[in-house]
Length: 597
Ligand SMILES: *[C@@H]1O[C@H](CO)[C@@H](O)[C@H](O)[C@H]1NC(C)=O
Ligand SMILES: *[C@@H]1O[C@H](CO)[C@@H](O)[C@H](O)[C@H]1NC(C)=O
Ligand SMILES: *[C@@H]1O[C@H](CO)[C@@H](O)[C@H](O)[C@H]1NC(C)=O
Ligand SMILES: *[C@@H]1O[C@H](CO)[C@@H](O)[C@H](O)[C@H]1NC(C)=O
Ligand SMILES: *[C@@H]1O[C@H](CO)[C@@H](O)[C@H](O)[C@H]1NC(C)=O
Ligand SMILES: *[C@@H]1O[C@H](CO)[C@@H](O)[C@H](O)[C@H]1NC(C)=O
Image 1 (cartoon, rainbow, N blue to C red):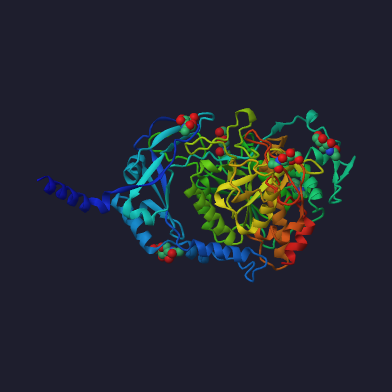
Image 2 (cartoon, rainbow, N blue to C red):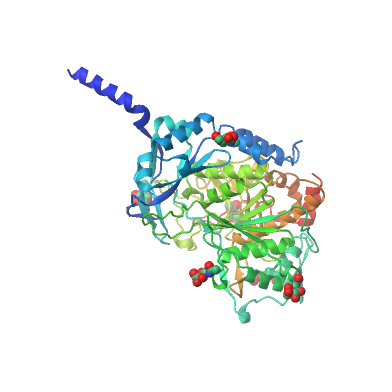
């Protein structure tokens, strides 16, 4: 009897299995610094992003490296939009399986969108339905220190037969907060603006490079200072050779055009009356009210466009900002806006050749599966000939907690062990991570984000440089605190403090690797300008070039360190280091190098 009963039960389960058996897809430890406020309203709408596996991604990566390696015969032969789409397209089986799964849950084709390569789906669904699809329970979570509110879960499942067809679904387990990189921020009234000598009264000569810089640049960084310091005095660009530069903006920040004019009057009078194109992604704000201007957006645009005028500039304002109220019926920010921006920009036929982003978060708060997928999107952009610069972060080797005493650097994986905390997306091997320097002659700035990824292995292009650095480290120092085999950051650096910008009509001094990324991007754009004017393709993914023939085009920074996690961090050293990377750009030298490859 008993035997018969269990056989029957088994048969019943086996018949139901193909549709009903959910299997765990991802689970994370309860995230540090977040607390549950309650269950999520069932009718609250979230936008599920379903990423399908890209079985040929390895071919895309291979081609990216070929077209980015100056010693390869395919150097500069970037891929078209159709070519990259084909390389990241999913298996037709996966496409069919996901389409069927959505249909089973009553989501018709009219209610979701697919990326041009068909490798991701986006569907707005009520939480109640998402919970059924993913066999999970969403909660409303609040960040304990800054009050950000998100709707998330710590684990989700998928029908077993769908596992080979879906790489990840978000927002589920992502608890990243995604901040602008900014440390200091002083409103300077005219009388206490600047302790340095007035411009034109003294000159500092860099003993190593011989470069002459106005003494005021030691404490107030302007467009003129950067051109002097990085050997680009008198460089002119074309408005019409097809070169463009782009700046990404998030968190409802927009760049104010009136402030840009005031900045130009102050630092770049020949650019007065020129502007840039604002492109709103997903309904991103562009409120030109002067008092609502964004510091990050103004900094990034004023310096990037100021360095490269008259090169046309684009500013993307991407929607999504905490805090939000997870009430019924509203779609929320998802705190993963890179993907929104990536979806948007990858669908464009023409993309600016140089793009800077000054936002990021601790790598460990971004689930590894998601980080890999986003990083893959950056590889696609690189293959299409785009250089992406990202700030390396403002926490030295630590987690960016401005108070070193409370900086715990504990891991988020439930084990609570102390580890250096690298930043993402800087840790993605397909972007150029920009650290920071200060003063003239330049030394490393102490907040310069640097270290080693715990997700991404060290890419071949930085093998020699990073091994050289690791060999110089005192034996056994920081053992267990970092992953010596990881992708190392930063790649390069640039000035990162005392930038004079205009914000809501006032002169402000501002700093952070937020300043160094648009600065470095500005110089890359000047290099692209030279290449396009010479009939050459743009630089695209630039790291393989920088670490090989490019090394001689850098000012090596050898003084300073980047403390964090209760340690002095790494030292700036001769050659590449985990504080300032290869160093700061010498435009004149880099120009000769990039024109000869
Ligand atoms: C995406 O799917 C559509 C329709 O199924 C198809 O026409 C198109 O070729 C696919 N794109 C790629 C890159 O496979
Ligand atoms: C630059 O400023 C720093 C900090 O104020 C100061 O210590 C240094 O002496 C200055 N350098 C020069 C060359 O004036
Ligand atoms: C900007 O516009 C003003 C007013 O139209 C004009 O007087 C000025 O010459 C322009 N400046 C430049 C650099 O074009
Ligand atoms: C910008 O925002 C302010 C304050 O939120 C509001 O008063 C103003 O009407 C907005 N302006 C525009 C152009 O949207
Ligand atoms: C890690 O820290 C969290 C939050 O402080 C705590 O709830 C948890 O018990 C700790 N886990 C371990 C293994 O110490
Ligand atoms: C940094 O340099 C100091 C002084 O030379 C040395 O004591 C320390 O061990 C070095 N730290 C690292 C991480 O290399």
